[in-house]
Structure formats: C-alpha cells, structure tokens
Image (tube, rainbow, N blue to C red; front, side):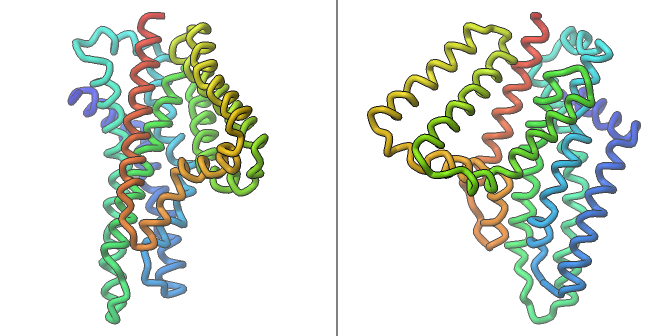
Length: 290
C-alpha cells in the first residue's frame, strides 16, 4: 500500500491537480474568513467552515475523477491486478493519497482561530467549537472523497466520473432541501422509497453485472415496503423526509458549529467512508474478473 500511496501522491503534484485543489480551497476559505470574521467581526471560524461546505461540489470531482478512471482508460489497471497486493490495499493507498492532499488546506486553515484570538481579547472565540467543526469538516470531505473514488471506479472517462461525482455531491448537498419539499403523506414516502430501492438495485447490478442479483435485491427490499404500506401504513407517514434529513452529510456540520461534538455524526461519516471504500474494492474485483 505504501508504494501505491507514494506514487499517487507524487502524481497529484506532478500534474498540478494537487496544487490547484489546495490553492482553490485556501482561496475560498480565505475569502469567507475575510468577510465573516474580519469584515463583519464574527469571532466564529466555524461559520466559515459551514459556509464553504459547498466547495466540495467542485473540489471532490476534481480530485477523484482520475484516480481509477484514468487507470482503466490507459489499461494500466491490469498492472495493478498483477501486483502482489490485495485490491483493498491498492484502493486504500489511493484513498489515503487523496486524503493527504485534502488534509493540507484543512491543516493550514487551522491557523485562523489562532489569528482571530489575537484580535479578540474579549475571549469570545471558542477553540473547541472551531476545531471540533474543523474535524467534522475533514471527515465530511473524507466521506465525499470515498464516494467520488467509487464513481471513478465505474467508468474509464474522467469527465463522466467527474459528472457522476458532482451529481452525487449535489444530491447530498440538497438532501435537506428535498426533505422539506417532499410531502409527509404515506404515498409520497411509499413511492419515494420505491425509487431509492430501484437505485439500490441498480447499484448492485453495476457492482455485480448480475441482473438476477439486482432483481433479488429489489424484491428483498420492496416486499417488506409493500407489506408495511398495506398493513401498517401509518409507519410511512413522514418517513421519507425524516430519513433524508437523517442521512444528510452536509447538515451534520451544523451541530458541531453549535458547539456540540456529535459522536453519531462522526460514526456516520466513518461508516460512509468505509462503505464506499468497500464498494470501490468490489467494483475493481468485478473489473478484474470481467
């Protein structure tokens, strides 16, 4: 894994992607800090981090689009399969290389609360809230990077990988807004869950290329839903909006910004990260045997 990590990390800086990523993140964070903290004199750096979270829609596809798609396009992925390494080690090496590039601007931005404390002798700055939010901000980015890496494993086109990653980031970003729009009625939740089950079945098909497995997955999830709809329909009232709010990645930053260190959010971010790393490994396994 160490050799893969070093190779990928050098690659990001050799083709300037890493420098563009770092510079863009620092520029956006700097602009928001200048406006929120220095112009309007808010001592809360956590407001900056929640405000710039939209940046992931741009930087994550930029960072992840080439990680596996380029390997497939250039057919160098066949060399990866011949290495005396587990596919999980290869995927983790690539993931940690991207995580290192992402960690650089996050660590550099850690100086802002210290600078603000110099200009705020009244002591209104909460370091625990600022750095707690920064930790959650890092985990949010790591979870989104794992999603982008999985999208890159599904195609050999960097453009398509970037578009799919952007679509996934956008849907995640708009989850709460969609939850507020969707009616709380039983039928809205029922048909909404059917759509989600169809998407899950499609994911199974992409990972296995087995239509029977996809149909079985659909039926396993759909049959209980149909039974609930006709036997205990009140359980579906408001269920879809509630679920969408619960799985929102971006909204979980808000509790940290409010000064609450939310361990459930930390576990959720780590779970999403592990899940999509697993999906990426399975996607590469499918590619190996196809």
